[in-house]
Length: 504
Image (cartoon, rainbow, N blue to C red; front, side, top):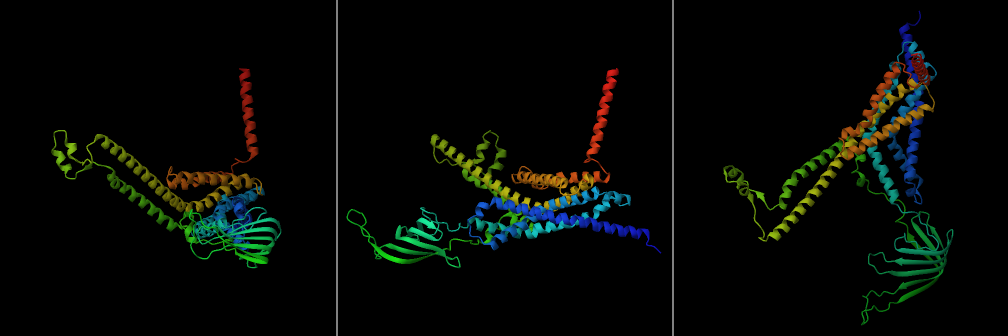
């Protein structure tokens, strides 16, 4: 007895699901790796000047690249889903596998189901990643990048120029041959915080410079020179009768071989406390962002409510509380004056006018400073609120990119890295530009924060639905032959109209 037809159909559908998933994951991981690599190259190009000539170990540099690679995953995920889904269904359409599925009774919607479920998984992963991993990676990456940028450059003494990056020393050499130096001049400055000038000068005809194995100290082995030190007996400086300090005495110590050891503690990488960077919205989870945004909005409301009370100090006239009731009984036309309490400081009209102008200017300055303060509070609130929305928008964009890529691949029926890559880059650029545009308007307060945050998704989601509809009806919107046929029909119609006009 043979296998029932419905079981054969189910078995075939499962094989098709495996085929689609297998053809999807190859381009997906490749695209994800390429996009992460491109973003890392962008990072190197932006901060190449900060990396060059810094004494950074390969381990530290590798940690920096690792943290920024982690950060690029949420950004790279929509493009990877878009390109891989487009290539998957483009290959299926190019080799008529989609046509075979439809002839076997499998609709396009059913063929999309395995990748649709996978898109939902990626969407949930993106939200979790943005909310849990990205704040940690941002904190680690940008704190390490700050430490690298603020680290001093490696020791580089040039010929004929005083080198002053070593704290407490100024060093000049006439000639430099690798580690060998000639005609050295070394000034030792006072580092106790009291300005006393150069207390010690070392002159040497030749020497050698190197660092110890731990790279913690710089060693100068000097030959044939003198060490000049200002004599100080510990007593206060005495002056002559003219008020000019008495001539000081110097001690000269000649040497044939002298070793000077200088600490390199100020060089290299010094880690900063990471808590100094936790204030940034990128370092916060969704619950923390919402709490900070609500706190900033409440502070702005309290500050705006307190402006009216504080501004009373800039006025001489004040309403009397009990006068409001009495004013109802005033009928002689001068009841307004009875509502005001004013005690003039002077009877001189000119002084009163000057006083009024000064108080008006003070009130204007007070109002302007409060406006600036409230606007900054609102902008800070917008930034935190915007970042909390992006936890969701970046996750939703993964699904929207799938909704665009899969139907588009079924329509253009072209696989490989040619046309799909071009189309994917165009849609990704549109997503990126719309996101930046919405963020700018939202941060400036020109648009509501939800509108700016969701602008890109609101524009691209209808496009995805339209492409899905066109793919289900086997639209030929990307078929050049269909446009050629339509153009031929249009030309025939124009020729027919011309012929009718000439006959008439």
